Length: 251
Image 1 (cartoon, rainbow, N blue to C red):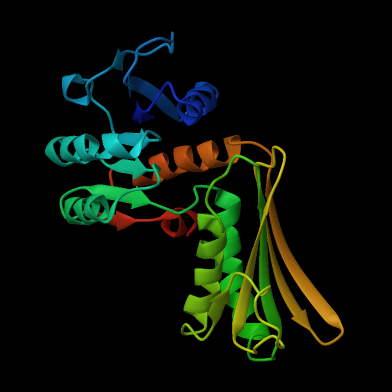
Image 2 (cartoon, one colour):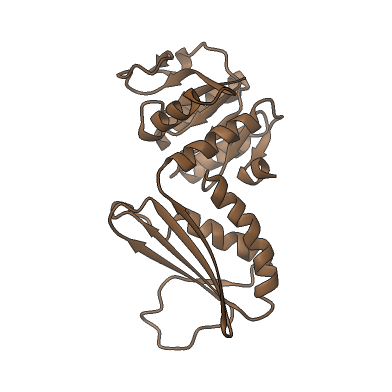
């Protein structure tokens, strides 16, 4: 049984993870941390992380960037591994996370979905087959109309997995509207679509002569990210100090 502290327990993702854990006999949320204790979660909630004295095996974090500094101080002092899911961290915070990983296990990933991380693994193999054969590579990502950043972090992570496999031979191209010229052989195009309530869709296209191969991942709800975070927590429990990511979880 993996005992979890949910950091950001009353947020949207915190509540999704709380529900998932209720139906998973291998895990239990033993405490939560949030700025406001206004829900009946079935476990104690602390509005100050330093007041949390509940023993746990791992922390799952889905909070806000300003809360991460105190979180990292806490996990380093308590030697509790943390699955760090909060995005938008500053360079200073990322450096703090890196330093803390020398003393405690920290798992951080651009996307917590098991499907996306398996796709990244598959894309490395695909890139090494299709890129030398001259196939063009394009990524199209779609998200809801409230998402402010483009392209998505996941689209960039997918591109990076391809580029890492090919020794960074590709140049990312985000907009061709200002240039009238043929596509370069070493371009990797990334396009963003924003509309409606699309949770997240990513399509990777390998286009050759008379042949197109497509890899596609569609998220229909935030549950896919929550499930990945719970699986990551199971993996990270008991691990030695170091920096981990979802590639370690899927093996």
